[in-house]
Amino acid sequence: MIEIFGIPSQALFAQLLLGLINGAFYAMLSLGLAVIFGMLNVINFTHGAQYMMGAFVAWMALNWFGIGYWWSLLLTPIVVGAFGILLERVFLRHLYHLDHLYGMLLTFGLVLIIEGLFRFKFGSSGLPYNNPIPGGTNLGFMFLPWYRGWVVVASLVICLATWFVIEKTKLGAYLRAATENPTLVRAFGINVPRMIMLTYGFGVGLAGLAGALAAPIQNVSPLMGSSLIIVVFAVVVIGGMGSIMGSIVTGFGLGLIEGLTKVFYPQASNTVIFIIMAIVLLIRPAGLFGQTK
Amino acid sequence: MNKTQISVAVLLVLALVAPMAVYPLFLMKVLCFALFACAFNLLIGYVGLLSFGHAAFFGMAAYVTGHAVKVWGWPTEIGILAGTAIAAMLGVVFGLIAIRRQGIYFAMITLALAQMVFFFSLQAPFTGGEDGIQAIPRRPLFGFINIQNDLVFYYVVLAIFLIGFGILYRTVHSPFGQVLKAIRENEPRAISLGYKVDRYKMVAFVLSAALAGLAGSTKAIVFQLASLTDVHWAMSGEVVLMTLVGGIGTVLGPVVGAAIIVAMQNYLASMGEWVLVVQGIVFVVIVMAFRKGIVGEIADRVMRLRRT
Image (cartoon, rainbow over all chains, first blue to last red; front, side, top):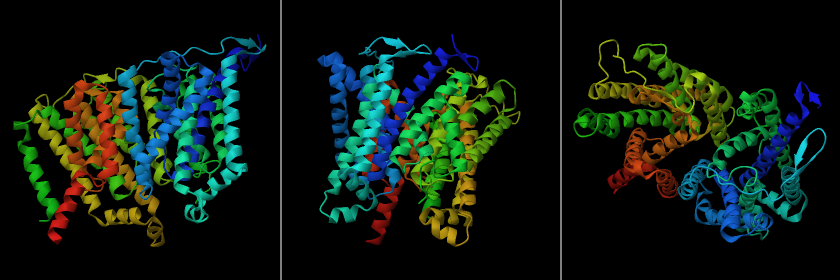
């Protein structure tokens, strides 16, 4: 057995992989938050609840309709995204002209409703979701379960694809332009309100997809989102919401750091991200990738 | 006398006779949360800072008071002061970190810091983990006031609330309070006028944290319990809701809001998860339709009636 710093490599890399997976979820969620904030100026508190909904949609698809994992990966973002669009049309749209804080308060209220309803229906304990690709391989220094490897690769691809669309395509150029100056973009004949609506749907769909990916790893539980979203807020504060790539890098990086903390000083593993946030704020108030306005 | 002073006087009389009609324990709960909400309102209503982490001050003060009174055997009044002092210190730490950012970021940062305090409370040995600190004794206050008696204790809690409320009222209606409002309305302008904005914000933040702590400490003695619920983010959300329902930036709004939400929780206690759902619905309705809150809307109506 190989040892690194007195810790068996199997245990070390297992925790690192776990950290990387958590980082994948941080990255996907903070990416969605950043995209939504850029367009809507709303901090989407419901993001965690929508992640939880994603996991439940996958669970319900399997247990109620017999739809397998791979199809639900396609189905979940659509369902959750459509729900998001509904929320935007009914509620959020009417708050854009107000202080940004009201958007946060509204979405916080929605969290209470959504979580309460799911707890009423499913209880607070988790429901299992079978691993669609069981087994794994021994790499010598660590054991790699196939599913965990798949989650890391898939989320990396999703994050990079999002980055590509926003930074390198025409659609993304419109989006960035509308973030900078919605009135001008509107004058060019682009339907900005519809774009805002679809952006919200997209960000929320991304959260739903993350939830579906998480379903086989974590127990599917109504509470899985709310604790995660607070960590994701800290991730967003650390990274700054200025850059897409920044969100991705910070998300994965902080996941890894959290994994390492679990190995070397487990007592702090819950709080390490918040401590990093405090330090970053003291040194660079705008966040690692943010610009001060 | 102006409008607010008349309403305060009426409410005071009501508060003095209330125990004849309502359970003192319920009233004490209302008063604790009313003080908590008033402290929170100082920030959101008069400085324009939304703190989503006030449960940290409330809950940590409750833990400190509980531990000091139960384990160390400190007198009740010293225990409450200790809890308040710790909350103020925690406020200094939060303030140093969070005041560097405004608006939405401020809310996220305070929420994250409070979550850190939550995890600390979950793991620290003195908080009793999931059980919390139970059976905190109610020792005679100053050695002679018997607070075992709920009715006597009610008047003590009322006095504590009035002290806190008075401090807040004086703060808001002082030159210092005027500067806070100026910061809320136009921060760059306040800076250009030469005010050290961050220092003002800091003082307001620490004051708010300390009074939230006073509320938490008192609550710990009233219910003889300090638990994880007090430091959970849901508690931070609750105080936001109370203030929002009553009216942000109004003197009496938080008191009214606290009374309504505590009463609602009492009535719905048997309905389990639905309490959350109802609270969420109240949140959404207020944000969508009644952003001024109950007291704010009433004040508006009265003003409009006067004009016509």
